[in-house]
Image (cartoon, rainbow, N blue to C red):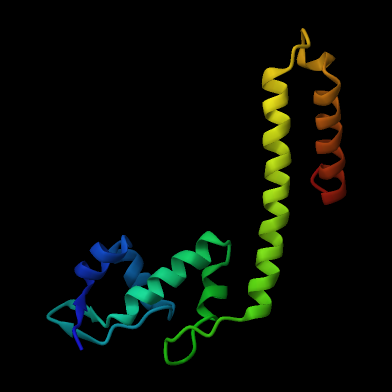
Length: 137
């Protein structure tokens, strides 16, 4: 099995050496040996780093991602958690799409003032209701 030193892993993955050391410290990845002072990693580390990046992009915390690897370092993905996160992403996509559409309307609105635009008024009211319901408002 070919080993990659930390610099090679950083180059191939786009993850800085400092981040690789941090990931190792928290148990996300494991170096297999050292060559001098340089950590050596197996090829599976590149797969693990891809999964970590995917998990981060999906909004999982590093602690949650750590739980997605078995003791052998292989993926052990909790399907129920993935479904829950996918549902959250669907909701976020819907909310962002609504916001995008509202902003496009406001940008193109023919009303002399945004405050005279009924759609803009509804948008402001909806934002206020959402903030009150969430307790941030």
